[in-house]
Length: 333
Image (cartoon, rainbow, N blue to C red):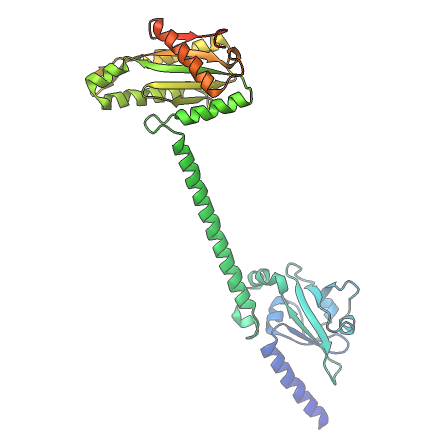
């Protein structure tokens, strides 16, 4: 009769474990499984669990000296880590103790820091955890944190994009799409500070005022847009073509100081600018004058000195008859 009562107590105890400890493992003295919680059974899916030996199902990772379940019991109250033999991707954490008045050993397991990976791996839901387990709340917080983190990352990307766009707009001439005076100054300052070799062309449009006066500002804008397109076509990616005034442009050419090369480029630009343009059926007759300077002809150049020298070269080109390119060398000091 006593044995029947004990068996009934065990059955009631196991039923309680299943309900309140879905990750439990109940073992007999020899380490064979009497029962396992439903969530743990999902983790061990495909394995013969009931009656299996503990060491055939799991590998203990810590403490390092533990191999058998009796070793765990001897360290009652000490946390241990283990992984299922058949799936080592998700680790488990737990505590073990011997049930008072019996030879049975109870292990209470959890996923610990591998909780999120376990939920994905085994498609776990709220039903797989005890009612008092905070696992679902932890998952909710983790998901909420991930959502907030992703939103912040997206916001930062949008802000960075807006910042870059604002900087780009601050350095761009809106009419021609070329760089503006501020951008040209920054490029010159950087080149001068690094003592790099470079050439500069200062372009002024001849007869542009006449186009504005006779055909109107819309025609003038049309001409400026065309000149912007021409300059973009004539320069390299590393060059800087900028509109620095009404009909004044600067082209900065890093690494180019050969007089013949600079003269050739300037002549080609003048030829393109002088090609016939028509605005609403009316010809826009302009040409271009270019003054050229080189960093090698300037003593310790700075941005302001470069632009002063290029303006002097431009004046010389105008004085030579317009539609000309003049390079000042050895006298820009």
